[in-house]
Length: 243
Length: 79
Figure 1 (cartoon, each protein chain N blue to C red):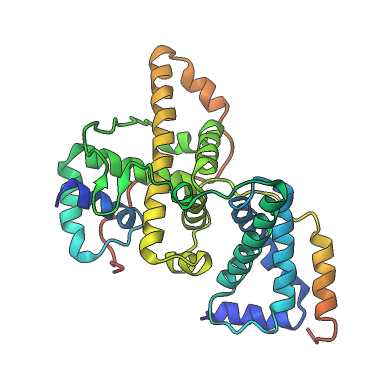
Figure 2: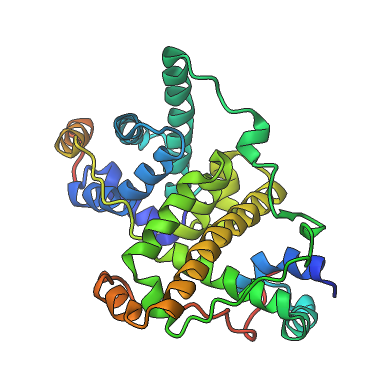
């Protein structure tokens, strides 16, 4: 279903409003490219997938029935294109597709209904971040995150990217990727757990370095990149519940 | 609430969409259980960090072509 603003946007697009199309492009292109990269290691192929997606969007705008949001429809087109084009690329290059086991990442630290595996034989060590906002903005931490995201099994990466990086709702993610709500929750938790592990390794190493070198913080802050303001507190406990 | 159940609910909790009926038990557990409390805080930090990742700035190398295709597709429409 389309919200009012999407209905207005759709009318503009169908009337050939170039500014509306340009705005839509700027809003979604990076997210589409990021999602395309989860299907292929080739940046060039990812760009082709995105391009093919936009062409399909242009061709399909008149026929779009509005059963999903515009964004979900566009993401869904990309996923179909990406599956077809990356499978063709793998066939041509002789690469064998990952098994479901690898795609789902069965070796994880968390299982639904059982919580964390081996709970709590080894209790998590607190990170003792004096200034989480500054840590969040460091170039090194961003690189750790990007590498951890890249290393996730395909489906986990897709779900984490859409849910946490692109802020797409769980319902939209299920529709786009054609997975159940339960599967989405499992993939998301496994993905987040693996990324937490990567951050844990990095932040504990950095804490050790800090303990050895008092000048570490100054050097680290010098490498800090400008970014959006950051907070990392748990969400407020009060407020409306969403069942 | 035990640790396994608390960890199952952490995904909903960090998104702020934990069911009202579970909130009290959940937060009581993570306040009392040090490993779960630490793990929850670290998952919150992880999600915040992910949300702040810079978007991939790659723009389509064929943006101009797309704009032309859009114009061509809707040439006869009246904006």
